Image 1 (cartoon, rainbow, N blue to C red):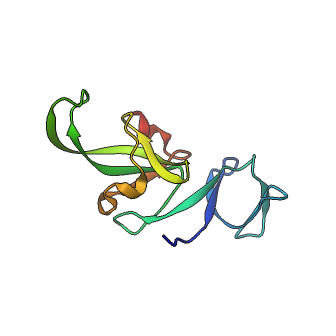
Image 2: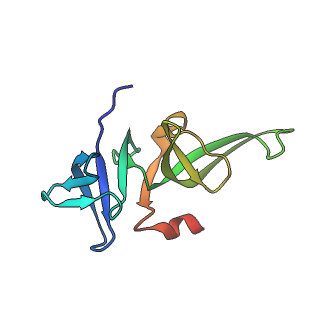
Length: 133
């Protein structure tokens, strides 16, 4: 799968999200659109997943996503039930893939979920309260 590699950063001091133009791993620095240089530790770096939501919004690490969830078995996995519901989760990168973590212990890989129903509704820095429902 070919995907565009790009990043954004969260500036907690100014409470704003910025696209990152360049990442220098040797010096541990980021350069944003205004040619401002910042350090990795100071500003969280979020990678683009290569996936857009149903509205065409790019999905990044740290985004809170409303997603379609079809559970085929109950929690004990002994009875089949076909339940369609929507859940919220945030995007994170682990073991070479992007996944969703949120309302249940089940963490689907982002690419394996029904992408055409996903909707970015915020991010963990500006809207963390969305995950506490």
